[in-house]
Image (cartoon, rainbow, N blue to C red; front, side, top):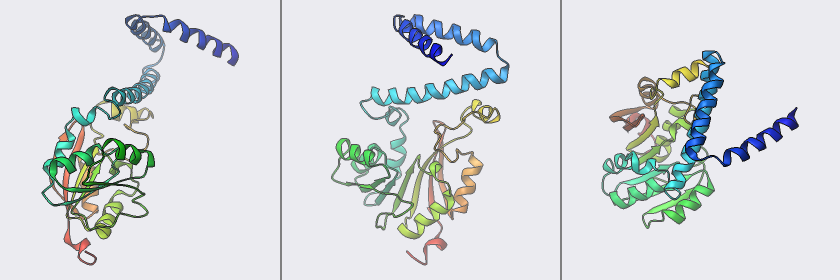
Length: 258
């Protein structure tokens, strides 16, 4: 039976290659419509949501290829500008979870500041050093849960990083004690971005944008975690189904060490 299924799969793949894109789209739609019509509503939704997750991943990969190695969201959403406009001249910046360095480069170039950019993945840092080298950016491979770069730093950038941490408030308090920043600039995904998200969760289907996310935020849960971290939100925007926020350290947590 398994052998027969493998042979059938190979035949179908070869046949589909000969179809034009419009023909392929039409056949896929007809197949999905026919198959889901035979399912219960819950079963059909689970099936379609699983396909949606696969498509979202493929779209992300192709968006990176389309812009030559950097996801198009960097230029389409304009989120770099949020960080740039909230950084003052001569401030010392620590970009935690910098990825391939696109944001660190723009901050150094447009805000005229020095940036230390750290990422856990050596491949990311290698790409950053190659694609986004800048005289005011220092790229570092490291695990900030084990050791933070030597400070002090005035501003901590956490761009789509906080949601990957398990103990987020404790993580933020730790950064304050060790690095002594004045401000955090934070970008995190919203749970309340689409009606499908709570429905996916209700149906037991993966609902997160990334399976490595420990959370995705409501406005209330974000405010609670920031408060638990002894931070005060001084500015907040909701853009592109994300929270973009500035948070300032409360002096009590810093006064013994900074």
